[in-house]
Length: 306
Ligand SMILES: [Fe+2]
Image (tube, rainbow, N blue to C red):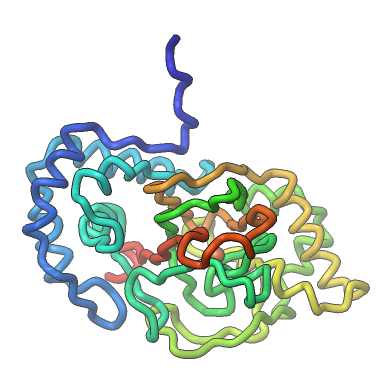
């Protein structure tokens, strides 16, 4: 029986690239950060270490096409389980950081967290938050900033043992195009606020209140949407209604898929929102160190830094 084709958004690394990365992994230097970004010296060292590996240009081109085509879905899932096995690493994500440096510049936006921020499952947290166990509705990461990260990425270290918590991604530009003129116009007004803004680097200034549609080109601006900000909003307010209309369109167009161990989801935040379905019932029966664990990292486009 032949195996079914991979969904078009999944990227499997060729075996000789995995072998090459595993071979060079131990020689990769520790990373250094400058203003939250992977330093220029680290970028150069990582790229040089991978320069002669097979299939590197094709890998970078495939990721570029999946992530950045303006009419594309704006996301990719890299299958890295074999790479994790081959390098014998679980939490030291250096070789994966090097791989990401082929796509864009790794960014640690949260001053108090490491470059790869662990997102475990905490039953005491608000269920809709990243480390909660409930439905995490459609949103952009660091939405209330003048310069949200260009890409948001999640590496699955341990899937939900209860088999749920599917990822959700939706192309936000298409969703906007399906709105009525009146709703789309309302979303251009600075009438929206979301949470706190502190101890952040590399994402500009706080924007409060912000417009959802900023009027810039698809790859230059953002559709600053998060359904989380609507939980406490007046449901009869026309601005809330317009944002709910956008959420409905996002849900109608969303893609839904599980992340397995070693899967790395990358979302281009200029083009797509993301979310997560609720984890499986009975999380209280799972020890905390066996619950779902993701590592989050952000990326900044190199062109945006020059
Ligand atoms: Fe998120």
